[in-house]
Structure formats: structure tokens, C-alpha cells
Length: 257
Image (cartoon, rainbow, N blue to C red):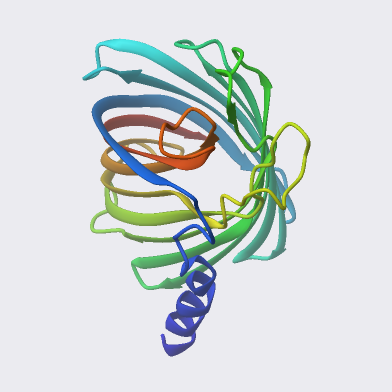
């Protein structure tokens, strides 16, 4: 157990600095929403080494009244050991509100440790997020694209009964590359390395059969976005920080093959 705690501390030490390295101007806008998250995933192992997982996710915002986003993802699993696997993932995000299309490329490492009915999982990896289809930005604003991130997650589940498994997890993303202006001159400013997203889930997984399950859960999602604006009245430019806090109600279907 001490080894697991040591790994957890070392793993999340990467996410310790959340403030920008430098900013000429700092402003914060808070937003809150309640959304519905639903979808399904199908996955399993072909043999002792290889497996895969396909999933689709739907998001309904504005207090669960408006269909906003669809995620489609494909993950390939390679098991180095029974409890250690490498999992590259490809995902497409389509935002129905603003017409944005984003491609996400992940490379994940999963390590799972089981103690009787308790399972602990560490997940770490890299993410490249590339906006390939977006509406034009407003004049005087720039964003990092593509974005490079590190991600880390700690998850725990307990098989309370054969059909019931409470679980919880927390996940953080760490932004690596500052945005640059139209001249691509990073000396003009820096957005800095920061945590663009922290989210956690608490839920119950109901095992219908040995191959299928339904999850009911609550998710807290705090997303921070930063960009440069030349439209501020008190200076030639400055860093804008926008914080969005979202609470999700979720229902998800899982199928193994």
C-alpha cells in the first residue's frame, strides 16, 4: 500500500503549479451549468495481449435541455502484464453549438492493483488536442492550437456485491505549450503551464450480467481556458482566464465481448 501511495504522490507532483508563469492582465469569469452525460462503450480482449474499446458519448447542456456535443473514441489495448497496459486512443469531438470539430490523440498507461474486492487504478499519459474545424476567432485573440497536455487519474472501485460496485476517481490535465501570437513569437508573452481541467466522478456500477453493466454517477468538471486579448482598455494586451464549472448527471452502458 505504501508503494501505491508513493506512486500517487509522485504522479501528481507534475500538476502542482496551476498559475500562469507571467501575465500582463488577469481576469476571471465564472460559469456554471448542469449537464446530462450519456453513452455506451463496447470492449474486451482478443487474447492475453491485445484488446480494444469503442465508445460514444453525448452531452446535453443548459440544465440538460440542449444537445451540445458528441464524442466518438477508439482505444487499442496492449497488455505488458495482466495489470499493466498501454492504450493509445483516437477521439473526435463535434460541438453542435459552435460548429467546432476537434481531434484528440492520447497515449495512456494503466496500472491496476487489486486487493480482494478493492481495485485501484493509476492512469497517466499524454494528449494532443487539435481543433481541425472551428468558427473564426474574434479579432485580437489567439489560442494555443494544437494543445499538448499531460493527464493523470487515480480511480478506485469496490465490488460490494456481485451486481453492485461503487467507484470514484479524480483526473487532472496539465497544459504544456503556451499560445503564440500571429507572428509566432513566444517572447511577446506567455500563457504559462497550468491545469486546464480537473474532474472527478462518483457513482455506482450495476452489473446486469458478467458482460454488461450500467453506471449511474455524478461528475464535477472544472475547466480553465486562457487566451490573449488585445482588446483590453488598460493595456496593449493581457491574459484572460475563464473558469467553467459543470455538474453532470450521468448514465452509461458498458458491454464486454
